[in-house]
Amino acid sequence: MAIRSSFDETETWETWQEGRVIHWGPAAYSDMTKIGDDLVGLLYEKGDTLPYEELSFAIMNEAYLDGPNDEPPGYETPAPGPTTPDISGEDNEAFLRGGASIVS
Image (cartoon, rainbow, N blue to C red; front, side, top):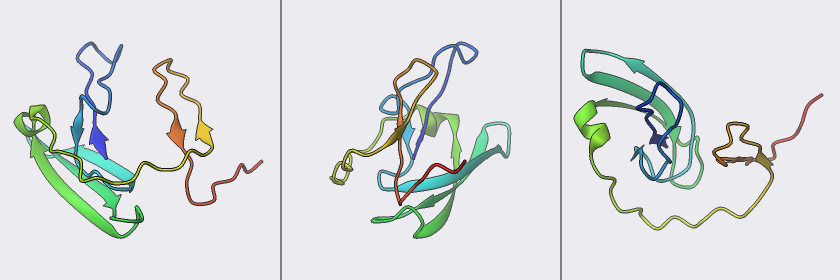
């Protein structure tokens, strides 16, 4: 789970490596809200082996988001699988996990 920023009115975005990694393991649904002048809250699903093991809430400020990332803990790279295309042109395809299927 990473928070990426845009500094040019959303014309371009940081890569996930340039953004602030909040959780290095599997993560799922998230929602972010402003909770003060310099604070945001992030509610997100995370886990060590599955993304749905726990629900976490983190409060952070801009200084934290601008800080360096910790070293990754050595999670295995996921096996290649089906992806969803990134139509933004940034080549940030999302991998589908957990038996995802197309519903028509």
